[in-house]
Amino acid sequence: MILSIRLLHQTVSLIALCLLSSINVQAQSARTNSIDSLIARENLQSSVRSYYIRPLLEFQQGNTEVQGDAKFTEPRTSLMRKVSLGIRVGYRSERLEVETGLSSIRVGTGYQFTPEYGYGLNSRVRSTDYTQVPLTIRYRFWQPAQRFSLRAGIGIAYNFDANRLPLSASSFQDEYSYTVDGSPTLAGRISSNYIRKTKFWSGEINLSAYYQLSRRFNATVEAKRLISSNAIATFDNVREVYNPASTQRFNSTGGIYRYNVNLGVSYQFGFQNRYRYSDN
Image (cartoon, rainbow, N blue to C red; front, side, top):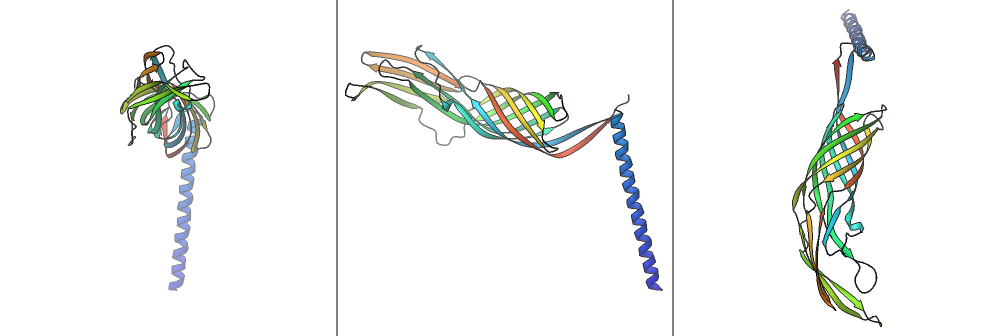
């Protein structure tokens, strides 16, 4: 008798639990259908906010200007370019996003010229890699398709030299001429003094294209114009030629006032669904 009562009690409890679960599922389904119906009738507007992390591959080109004797010009060398990895973290709403992170940028300066003797160019570049901490704001201004959008933004960045083994500021470069039998003869010397800032502020304006690969992943391509002083690095030079004797003075300055491009794939997490009622 006691066993039958227990079985009856457990059966009734199980049936009640199933009924409550069914009612809860139906209520959730009704709520979802109601929200979808309101969205379809444009009475309810939905938006998604999320956090994201984005590794970057950055392609950079520094700039330099040479003043003084007209024979000395800007160097054309790969040392003025840099390909590096960066990381960004940010918060994205329906139209706006704010992000920060870490990057590495290169500031270089130098010169090249054709000597009075021999063949080819004499070229020299000095460069410094800086760690960059940016703060950027972007706005989505065009979305022609569900998965594709364009954003424009502005930002500032703090840049600092983390090099713990700096090279000597003063240096020299010997120039040689060669006799008919190939013997080298010292023909001149360029004495240089390289001065660079240990930290500086820079700005940027950017334009980026987003393509949604899935709910969590987005591919991005961004072109940016970096803005900075053009005297972050300075190369002061004196060239002495021995025969015939002459002295030439010139200097070059370098900064990051150039267009750069980066590629990235962002991972979104921490989604927040927001709804707003619109009375049409």
